[in-house]
Image 1: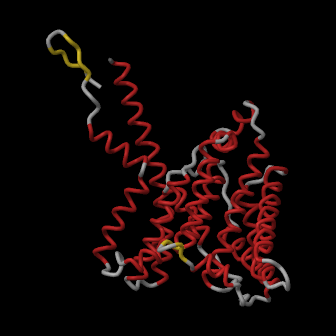
Image 2: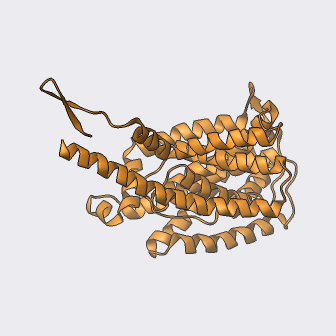
Image 3: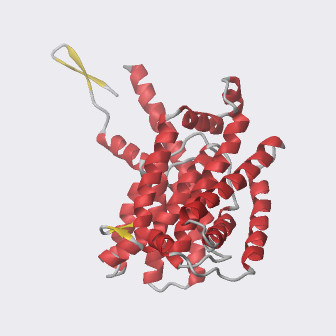
Length: 343
C-alpha cells in the first residue's frame, strides 16, 4: 500500500480491487468453478437447467456430500481413508437386512447400523493410532475386508424388500426439496458447528497442522486421530441408509466411486490434503462440481470410460489447484505485509 501526499496530509491508497477479487476467487475457488461449469453446461445441454434435472443433481450430490462432510474431518486431520466405497456397501446391506428382521422397528435398524459404523471407524482409527501406521495402508486393507464381508452377508446378491420409510428417505420430498438434501443441510449445520465452533474442531485442525505442536499444547492426538475415522464412518452410515432407499435395494457394489468423488470434492472445497484446515461448506460446493460434471457428461452421452478419465484428471487438477492456491495466497499476504511495513 503506497502513501500519497495531498495538502500536507498523508493518505493511504487502498489496496487495488484486482487483488481483492483474486483473493475472493482463491478463497472461494469451488464456488467460482461451479458457476463457470454451470454456465458451460447450460450451453452444452438444453436439459441441464430444467427443474427436474437440477433436482436430480442435488439428490445425487447429497449422498456424496454427506460422505464428504465426514471426509473433511479426516483430511483436515492430515489423514486419508480409502475404504469409503466398500464401507457404504457393507453398511447398506446391514441396514437392509436388519430392517427385514421380524418385529425389528426401522429406527432400531438404523441405530444399529450407526453403531456398526462407529465400531468400524473405531477399529480403523485404533489400528492407525495404536500401531502408528499410515491410514492409507490400514484403510486399504479394511477396504478388502469390507468387500468380502458385504458379499458374504448377501451372497453377492442385492438385498430387496426395502421398507417404505427408507425409500422415502432416498426418494421423497419435503415440499419440493428432496429429503436427502434436507438431511444434508442438517448434517452440514451440525458438523460445521462442531468443526468451527468447538474445542474438538480446533483440536482436529491443530493435529492436522502439526501433530508435535498439538501434542505439546496438551491435545490428545491419538484420540483425535482415531475419532475422525469414527466421524467419517457415521457419515458413511447415514449416506448408506439414504442410498439404499434411493435405489430400493442394498447392493454389494453400492457406493463405487463415492470415495474418489469425496476426495476430489474436499480438496476442491478448500481443505488442504496435508491437513491443518477444513471447509465443510466448501466440500458441499466441491461435491456440486463433481455432480455437475457427472450429470453434464451423461447428458452429452459421453462414453463412461472417458468419464473415468475426466474424473481422474479432475482429482489431479484439484490437488494442483490446491497447491497453487496456497502459493499464490502466500505471495499476496507477503506483499500486503511488506506494504504495511513500508508505511
